[in-house]
Structure formats: structure tokens, C-alpha cells
Image 1 (cartoon, rainbow over the protein chains, first blue to last red):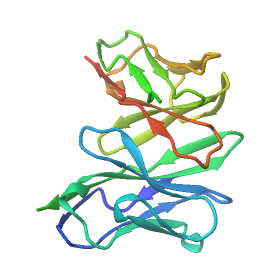
Image 2: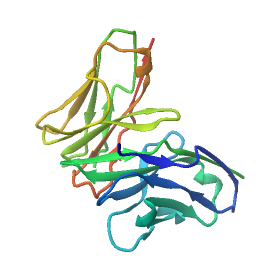
Image 3: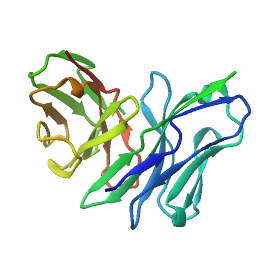
Length: 114
Length: 113
């Protein structure tokens, strides 16, 4: 079955630490990849997306992600986190199955200590 | 441009009852997807509608159903509620091409007692 796996459910970092959140998916074929973020009390919103071209994509607020096709991975990175990055992060994959279905991972809760 | 609107915001029901949730997408968006969000499970895909047709369905029992109207507004219905149906139900709209982002509503928090 199609699935999206996020390696860490909870991550705690100090400000200025580097961040890498893992994401792997089990789909074959062409996929579109996304990272969404949910800040406390806010809607889910898009951080970045990949659908073709340069496998290293840059998003808002200094986040970037790298698509490695051979590893079925799309890991999220940020060189230096801030307290305001405290949120829940979701990796998502969409694929054309006669209509597009976007499947989300279980999410990673990031807490950044000031 | 108005965002995705979900009503009601909160709902309390008892086991065995049924419930209908509503979602108004962003103007011009023809695709509406529904998700169930619970702590630790992330977002579980329920179904996706495009131009009044269900294009995709997740692995939920038949008690979960939906529909989409000609103005793209969508409703989701859950019959014979169970305690495990307590969750935040999110609606997301998009143009429906699969490469653009989903726009999410605030969700309906359903509690089943």
C-alpha cells in the first residue's frame, strides 16, 4: 500500500541548532512531494514542494528539502532553527491515480528551546 | 480571496448518531479533499471530489461518505458514530492538478461521547 513515513515523531532542539527531518515514501512512478507546517493554533500551510527539475528545493523561512529518487526520500532541512519554528511538520506525497490523492505522514512535532 | 470555510467548528455527538460536516472551498477551486486528523496518526485521507465526482477514496468504512455540489461546496457525512470517530476533520481545496498546494480550512472538531 502507498505510504509516507516520517522517522521522528518528536524532536527537541535548541535555537541555532541544525534541523533535518526524514521522510520516505513507498510509491513507484512519478510523484509530487510536499512539506506542510502547522504552527500552534493555525492552519496547515505549505513550506515547499517538488514536482520536477532541481531536486534541491527551497521554501519559506529558510527551509529546504532534497529529493533523492533512488532512496524514495524527501528530507527537510534548516541550518539554524529559531524558537518560532516550533510547530508540527508533515511530509506529503501526491500521485495521479485517476485523480490526485495527497497522502500525509504522521507528522513530526518540533519544539525549539529558546 | 476568502479561504476554505468549514462549519461547524465544534460538534459533540453521541454514539450511534450521524453527523454532516460542510466545506466551502476557495472560489475557483474544483477539488475538495477530506482528512481525519488525530494525535500520532497525522492526516488520514478520506476522499477527494472534483467537479461533483469522487476521484479517490481512502481506507475508511462505508459509514464515511461525501458529496460535492455544482458550486464545489462539499459535505461529509458519518453515520452510526463510534467513539473512535472523535477527531479533527479537515477539508482542503485546490485546482485539482496535483502539483499545486492544498489550502486547508480550520477543521471541524468532532467529539463522540
